[in-house]
Length: 216
Image (cartoon, rainbow, N blue to C red; front, side, top):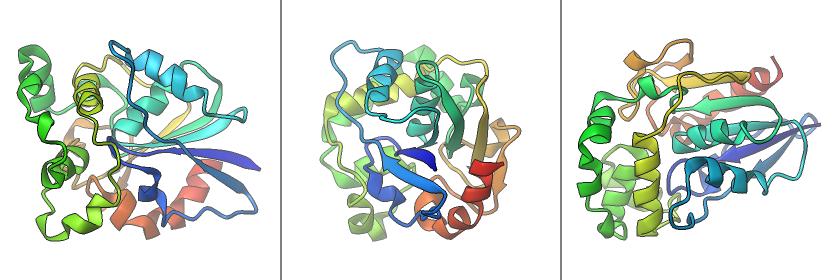
């Protein structure tokens, strides 16, 4: 039995994976949840603490968006069978220009994250898309409303330092991702018309291809 741990995107809860169904005779699925970091906590320290929630050895880690970054950091602390990075980046050079600009200007510090209880703003931060018509639908996926967590997460993404992912991994990316444009990304499994939220609205693609991707 292959043990698979899922890590959601920034501020999201595991319900983003509710329609992802892996064959139960081959895979056992587990779901990780965000916690509010301690003051001054580094991304490495956060990842190490998250590893404490894993109760099996040699697992497969699947992470979406910021969760994709976190699982790469987790793999630096525990042995993993494979990483599957979805709608994310595997090197800091893949970050979009606006995030690199923010890194050097600290512009991200000016974002109105104190308004995280404004669901429209939180959806934009978490999913990178303005989905005003379906806010109620997206609200169910977002459970972390803590301002310190949001500030911390944005800062960790903008300042993430990694030249390349050295672990056994597969990078799955949508060609319509508005948060992390595919133009910056090489060597990925490309999902046609996939957006940053394709784990939610393209779950049928994942149900068809994810088992083979894990096993290959």
